[in-house]
Structures are given as C-alpha cells and as structure tokens.
Amino acid sequence: MNTKYALPMVLAGSVMLSGCWLDDDDDPATTSVRVLHASSDAPAVNVRVNGDVVVPGADYKQAAVLTPSAGLADIAVDGLLPGGETATVISADGVSLRSDTKYDVIAVGKVGDETIEPLILTDDGARDDANSARLRVAHLSPEAQTAAGGPVDVYVTASGDPLPAEATFSFSFKESVGPLELPASDDYQIRVTPAGSDTVVFDSGQIGLPGGADLLVGAVDNTGANGDASPISLIVVNGGDVAEIFDVDQQSGVRVVHNSYDAPDVDVLLNDAVAVNDLAYPQIAPGAMLDNYAQVPIGTQNVKVTPFNDNATVVIEADLAFAAGVGYTVIANGLLADIEALVLTDTVRDIATQASVRVVHGSTLAGPVNVYLLPEGQTEVGNSSPALNGVEFGQESGYLAVTPGIYNLVVTDPDGNVAIGPAEINLEASGIYTAIARDNDAFDGADLILLDDFVMPPT
Image (cartoon, rainbow, N blue to C red; front, side):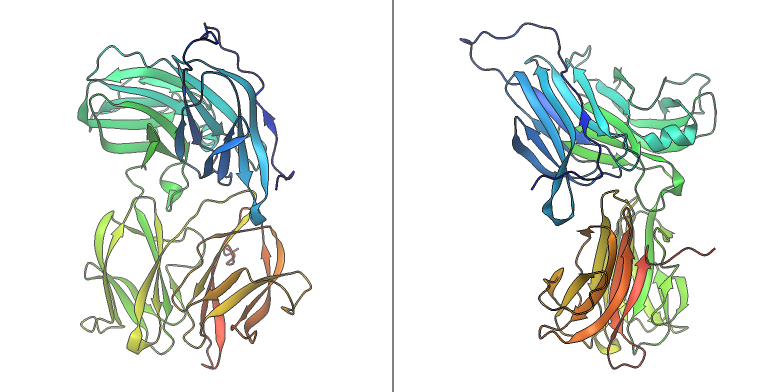
C-alpha cells in the first residue's frame, strides 16, 4: 500500500544529458545505474525503475547495480514504513541514461529535517593507468558539514606521514571529486579536518588501495557504536559491494546484562582481566542507556563470567568476534545450572519514520509467549493480533519497525494468560528500545529489564 507520510516528496525532475542515441533498428543497449542509500535516518527502501521494484529492502550504506536499457527511465525510491506501508522519498522521472556512461543515484540528506534528495553522479570510466587505484570521492555526510562548520579538507598520505601543509582536496556536503588515480599500495592513510584546520576529525589508520580498483568512496554519517570517535565513517563502494572504514580510535563496544536470577554477583573477564566487577542481578554494565558501551579491541576476544571474587570458577566462557563500530549486548541468561551467554548485535542508528523495538525472552518462568502492543487506552488483549507470536526462551525479535505512539505492552502465554503488563510505553520516532523479559524478584512471575531509549540519561 502506498501512502503519504511525514516524508518529503523530492522531485529530481528530468536529468537530460547530451549525446547520441541508438536508432530504433539498432540492438538495444544497456547502461549501469548504481543506487546507494546514504541517508542515515531514513528507513530501508525499495528502488523502482519504470514502476517495477528492482531492489527491495535496501538499507543504509547498501548499494545495488542496475542495468536498465539506455534511454529515458523513471527512477523512484520508496521508504518502507511500519505496517508494510511505503512513501516515495525520491522520484526522478525522465532520467536520460547513456549506454557509454555509468550513473550513481545516491539518497543523501536527512528525513527528519526534510532535506533528503537524490545526488546523481556520472562517470565515463576513463583511466590513465590500468594498474592504478582509481577513486571518486563524495561528501555524503550532513553531520560532518555541521560539525566542521562548512567544508572539510581531506589528506591522502603514506601511513604515518605528518599532516602536509596542503590538503589533497577540499569539498562540501554533496560535492564530489575525482577520478583520482593513485599508485597501488597497502600503506595509505586518509585524514579529514575542518577546512583550514589541523584538527583531525577522522583518521582511517593504515589502509590499502589495490591496483586496478575502481572505487566510489563516500564520507557518511557515523552510525556505529562508540560514535564519539568521529562524526563520519567512510564507505568504499566497489560495484555493489560496500565496505566501511571507521576512525582508528573507534573500537567495538560491549555491555553485559546479569539475567540469571539464582546466580550470585559476577565478574566479567576479558582475556582473563576483570572488565566488570561485582555485577548483580538484574544490573547492566557499564549502563543501560543507548550507546553506553565499554570499548573492546577489534578481533576475537575471550570472555568469561565468574562468581564475584572467584575468578577460577567459570560459569560462562566464549570466544567472541568484535567488529569495529559494532555494539554488542551480552546477556548471562537462564538459571545458574543452565546459564548461557546470549549475544545480541545492537543498533544505535535512529530512523526518523519509526520506533525500533527489540524484545528478548529471558524469563525461565515463562514458556513460549506472545507479545502485544495495544493502542493507548486498551488494556485487554481481546481479538488483537500479537506483534510477536510464540517467542521461545532465549530468542530475540530483532528490531521491529513500530509506528510511533503510546502503547500498552502485554506479554501472555499461548493460552492468553497475562505474564507481563499491561505496561504503558511511549515509543517515539527515532527511538531505539530493548526490553528483556526476566524472572521477577519474588521468583513467581516475569518482569522486564529495560535498555536503550527506555532509559533516560541522568539530568
């Protein structure tokens, strides 16, 4: 169902490019159109060409390469809204596509402030050296524009070199440079500063640029965990594949939830060093608020949970892979005799058109449960359909896209007996919410551990 929503309708109009076209009698020619989602607060999107959905459910920092027939084409991008509805956020009608040109159609700007629009780049693919690394670079980050107060300087140097007196190039939001051809090397470093400043706001650390590569590099809003390291990350687009480079100081993030009712206070060890001390049920360390993580080095790390001050008795042990810019919630789940680690991958990216809600079943006292989000004022389930059906212990819902509003949360068993609620919750647009069902303090029912935007920061 298509519907109007609080999303802007952006009309790109006709993008008419000069050039000769094939006659009707010639063999049909195709072109290359790459679509890139670079709007950090926009939902996942469907991409339509001439009315047909050709890319379903593309999310932020994802790309797809299309090969439509050369000539005129209508290109549209539809945001996916809660409940399966859609709203057209970009409509570019009558785009003229040449067979000898490649196109990038990039969704940039923000939904929340109604600045989302298409940025269309063209490329003829010409290069001087087949063995060079060919780059085109685009400034796709409104956050960086705001943080820098204007344009930014970009320095591409050998790794470890001091910042030179002159930048490799400078640009502003929605501008692009290139193609640049650089010798292939594994020893580059990219740094970004506000224009005219030597204050580095992004540092890639050592990176490689392979020979023969033809890359689109975009500076985008940083939506990774521990995002205070930099306002931006870099996405490197190679065909339809996207890799991300975070600031060298942006590590992984982890928080730990004690959700084992009959387990004692615990210590959490990272590579045999105590990282969390004396964590009691049902506490969270370092905290329950959104993006409140302890920084963890990137790579595989050994994690142990032991009784407080008894680090020789290990109740949970796991080797976990931690990725740059990713936040993890590790839940000590279940009763002590069967305790296990439930590891969740979190998001800290807010989406302007929805509340993002995640529910985790961590109560040993409840079997499979149904989860209801009832409209404000309704406290009985009645004939309502559950938002989640038949959730088993140890399962989590992933992030559900929910229409913002006030709801009554009710959790029932399969027979409709209420285990939790009704609990009134206010789900705001752009909010991120996590609720973990736990055994309550009387050990005779279930209750909730609330995280992320359910928890207000201290005043």
